[in-house]
Image (cartoon, rainbow, N blue to C red; front, side):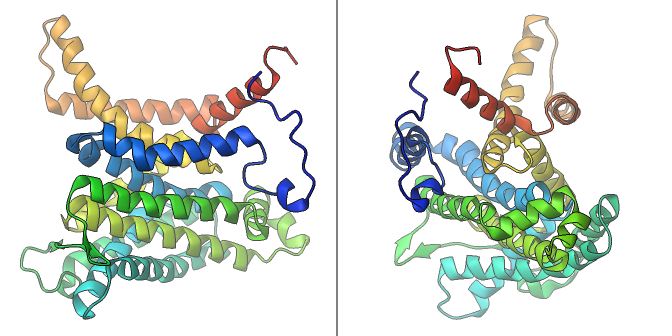
Length: 358
């Protein structure tokens, strides 16, 4: 009875077109943002911030970008890890080669560099689609892995092949503790999340979804496939590149090309599939699932093995984790292709009708 829009009248077009037309949704989102900004710093310890919450925030941001390309525009991509790497290394080189370069502009410029690379490797989408496009984006992954591993200029001629950053500051404020890092990443997630939500509701977002549903019909009604597909690659690569810079600068601190291998691309694709294709909320659900499930298995499997007197080592837990992920991917593709976000949407719809059956 509490989740109804009865009596919530819209008297202007602006009110009718707002992001959250139901007042309960607006208050829930504001409460969630307030809890993330105020409640989490008081409730979470350093380990939880470092091991769970910061990876969840950054992977949610990366999944937003992947979902725009895969979920909203229907362009299958397995090169997200490469775009994250481009954002990370570009931001690193802007930081070390430009005197006085602030942290936030360096991260955003890393996203711009990822945009250029994403559009370059998105050109094949004008002629191919489906599995062939996935292979083309996979070529971007292998090329970037080779480039950042072999060309020492990107790592400032480091003998070990690693890049590292330290003493990060924003407007004179140091970003050193896990709490400061969390709040810094959270601001990016909130801003880009609201931008992505507005973008997919705009004219370009409707063009993306038209291309996803049937590109030939979209072209017939006047939508330019080249503009729609390349703009999806550009926006997606920009967000993923920013997430890659945050992953390198904030979460890792010191990294090498293996941190953005093809496994990272598959991880982001799994997040989008499990969370829900074509859903902003799905990026958060999928990232939470991917981050929490390995920690749960690391605690649960040894406990179950101890009950039966079986020694469960870390290798077994790691292998079982891949098995669970694979089984979940197949289950979601068969039973609920729209992922956890669809289940959430169904639950909200039932709340709007409860306690009536129809």
